[in-house]
Structure formats: C-alpha cells, structure tokens
Image: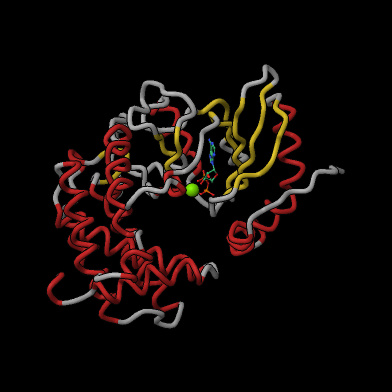
Length: 313
Ligand SMILES: Nc1ncnc2c1ncn2[C@@H]1O[C@H](COP(=O)(O)OP(=O)(O)O)[C@@H](O)[C@H]1O
Ligand SMILES: [Mg+2]
C-alpha cells in the first residue's frame, strides 16, 4: 500500500472519470504507478505541474541530480503516436524524451520552463513564436505508409457530439464547420502532409531552460498528437484560441488579422487556415462540453457564433 497522495487537477480527474471503468482504474492506480516509475527510472518525484488537461505531470530529479519531468497521461489518446513523434523529433521543435513506457502511458521528459501562454506579450508575438516553432516541428520525418486525414474524424466528432449534447450551438455554426471539414477532407494530399503537432496552443509551448539546437525559437512543444495532416491543420489550432481578445473586440476583423499573420509567417494558404480554425473552434468547444468542461468550451462556441457568417463561407 503506497503512502503517496496525488494532487490532480479537476479537469484531469473529470476527463479520466468520463472514460468509465478504464479511467477509474487509472485514477485508483496512479499513486502506485508513480512509485513504480520513480523506482524504475531512478527519479525522485517532486511537486505537480498544472496547465494540462489530460495528464498528471510532476517535476522530478534523476539519480545524477538532473531536473526532469514525469508525465502520466490519462489512457485516452494514441499515446504511442505521442512517443513516436518525440522519438523521431529527437529534440527538434519538441521536448527531449528521456524514458517512456507506452503501455503505462508514461514518460520522463527534459525539464522545460514556463509556457508561452504565461509570457506577457501580445498575441501577434505569440503567433510569431508558435509559427517559428511549428516550422521546426514539421521537419519530423513522416512515417512511411498511408495516413487518415483528421478532417474525417472531426466530421464524425462534430456531427455526433452536436446531436448527443442536444444542439449546444446553432445549426448555422455546425453546418459551417461540417462544410469546411468536407472541403479540407477533399483537399487532403499525403504528399503535402507532415507529422503535425495536433494541439500547438501556447500552453503546450514551453521555454527551453538553456539554448540548444532544435529550439532556435527559444521554445519547444510538449504533448504532440502524432497525427499526419496538412500543416495548415496546426495553424487552424493556433487560430482557434484568443477567445478573450476576440470577445473583447471586433471578432471577425481580429480573427482575419491573426489568420493573415499565420499565413504570412509560414507561406501557407490563408483559406485553408481559416477553415481549419473554424472547424477546430467548434470541435474543441463540443469536445470540452462532452466531458463537462463548460467553462473551457464557452469561448470556443461563443466566438464560433460571431465568426460564422455567409461572408466567411
Ligand atoms: N517537460 C516539461 N517541463 C516543464 N513543464 C512541463 C513539461 N511537460 C509538461 N509540462 C507542464 O505540464 C502541463 C501539462 O503537460 P502536457 O504534456 O501538455 O499534458 P496534457 O496532456 O495534460 O495537456 C504543460 O502545459 C506544462 O505546463
Ligand atoms: Mg497539453
């Protein structure tokens, strides 16, 4: 019987509980798993880190005194894809992976600093940093073989959740999201696709503690999804955020401005970025609602209402 108590963020606990028995089992086994991994990887586990939504993350120290970070993910995602991306990246655009156990959804990571989300600079500067870091991250070699376009999964997710949750946003919004998803699916081209991050928001973008090759922007990503997609998929995720700014100003004008910046920094297609951005806004809002994170969902769905209009089709 372990003595360890685990401080877990509410949103993570809710996400695990939402998975049913598999998630409950994960929650119950977490203290023992932390102990086992601490022994196996010869680390002392320190205080937990907040900011994520699907993992227990804590500072750790290796036997030779190096700082590291232990991450145990809720058994929900394709964790193998996350590990593969970090192994293939070898520190370029991404956190370095020190040890991992795919079956236990566990990894030991290079210790990083504060997230870009906590840096006090305007959105335009964050967008520039995200684009520079993404350009580095998109260099990860693409595994051989076919790939499934994530637009197809989003079509399914948006349609199903909108019905199941009792139409929590307007039909106009959901129709526009599905139209954009179908357009992105029709445009899918494996030759142009890369290993995308999948969720490159400022909370997943952390400062490196000392400058190093592969982190020329000063930041690297954690928490990749391991998807193969058009690189504009990631830019759509970046465009999806900035809820407070959009809700405080002229949302369509500001969102167009951010979209133009994303296209300008990367040389990629503005229309594709806009369409992915709208789709991501709606799918993330619905997904957050589906596990009870209503506060998180609200800005996504409110801004979607403001950005859905015939001129944006
Ligand atoms: N290597 C790291 N160094 C420092 N902080 C980290 C590291 N990895 C994750 N974190 C912190 O923990 C949070 C959650 O980690 P993340 O991998 O994004 O998990 P989640 O799946 O829960 O989003 C991050 O937003 C960040 O604040
Ligand atoms: Mg994260």
